[in-house]
Image (cartoon, rainbow, N blue to C red; front, side, top):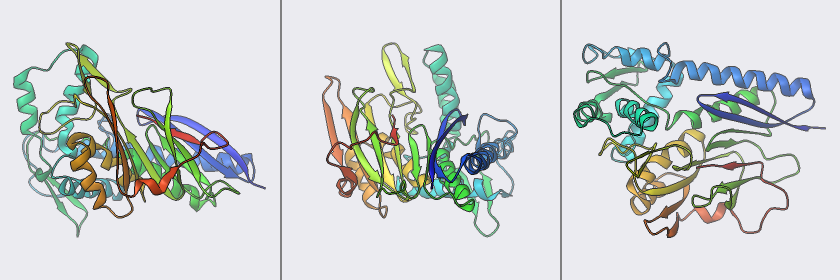
Length: 331
């Protein structure tokens, strides 16, 4: 008989949570060990905090100017970067992993509570632009075409990582599992004797409350908002989600929950919807097979407005679940 096991571990600047069913403690421990090893491997490839990561080493090649030629990268970095470029095309640049120079400024804003120097912001914006990335698909090679470029894959990597964790678990015979990394959750086969995982969506206006539940299996859900990650400067709230057009974090209150067949897609879609707003953002959702979204905005008067894509209703749990959800998607 399968038993339920839960593991938690801080990774990639957040808390990863595994929920899985295994025949015994030993099998569960082996699965968790393999999962954390895969997360560590991906962090070493994709981290923009670690100067020794594959991503950081790639970007450092622009310190003295644009890269002269493409450089081959590992499969994980290639998948993330190539998917990010396609996301930029679909969103007309609202999603852009070249915002790394702006991310560094945003992090300083959260620490100091001060606006960045305008000239420094201008210089950082000059290094930003997804079209500065050239891909060579035949050789899985990447070329950065502007000096001082810094890629930030934080808006796509956790969803990819959660999917990769479930792939790792499946190689060990663990199919009934879920991996969550903050707002990014990838669900495998449903718990034994159940049709779906039930996921609670955190309320944007009241963070301690659940705004609703969705049902998924072999699917992904991601939620983005400024509930926990924001900077306040001179009474103005700036989200951690950076608008490439302005160079700073969003100032409007918006929470986005997306569902998609895989983690990497569910993860990145939340950002352009947050930037472009409900109407334009949901147009993107409708172009992605199987994807759905729920968007919540709060205006200056505190009024909350909810928008949903055409496919979202098929995931909604209309009655309160009898038991607590396995986890919740948090802003």
